[in-house]
Length: 67
Image 1 (cartoon, helix red, strand yellow):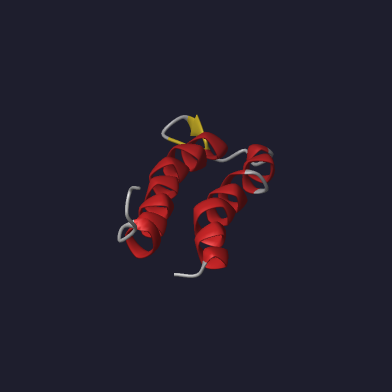
Image 2 (image 1 turned 90 degrees about the horizontal axis):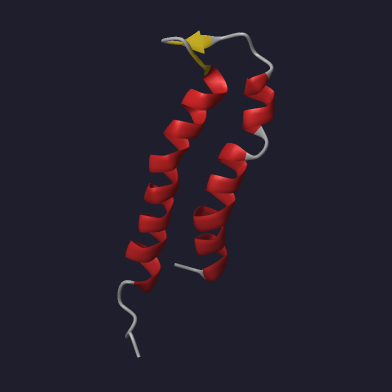
């Protein structure tokens, strides 16, 4: 995997899923089981970030030597 693709997946996707969306979702009066939608979105971004980092490792750094 190219370094640019790893940066886009490992940094870009998590960044774009949190920074621009949470302020926009915070203004909505929508709640899910009594919790604001922005909070639910943040909790959903935790596994998304882990998945993005796993993809970067699996397709990019897994086959590198540790030395």
